[in-house]
Image (cartoon, rainbow over all chains, first blue to last red):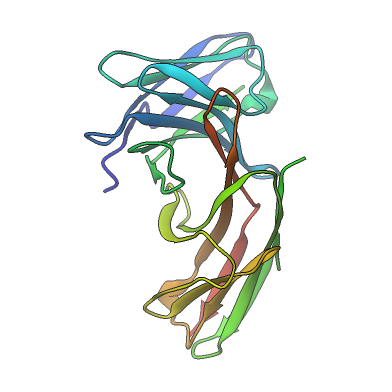
Length: 112
Length: 113
């Protein structure tokens, strides 16, 4: 158990809909990262937050947004969903900006 | 553009047959290189951090090494429980002082008893 909690574990929705994925980092970790993993793309970095502030951005679509709250949990919002958004979404945390990331079990999103 | 390339894509070994996985990278502002293990349906699990060329790290049957352009993960006398996807990642300087961690596509390792 990494100590990172992600909910929901599975989510099935329709095209055009909006979903929110939630992540609680390990106790004491200030950084939260979001990754998307699909079969043909591997782990794609989306965004990083540190203590509530956005710090680094990957190829995150404009339809996607994230935030980190004062209690350090984070949410990833995915809107106007398309079939191609079906993937595993992982949250990871670390104490600061180190590359030693601790991953949650992921949220599997299926868009029908 | 920052890039991490892993080879081979898949590797099938007999139990006890040692081999190496490769990770080559091009990145500006490298802060560190990391190896992770991922089991099916699970999140990646951290294995090693390497910061500078010539550095080596070991854990049980695994040994990671780093040069200026690539890293190797050596697996000595593997067992079936070593079967997993091994991911290489590099951390580069992002914008506004943040740090991106970029992953390669991984090497799927199958070890047969």
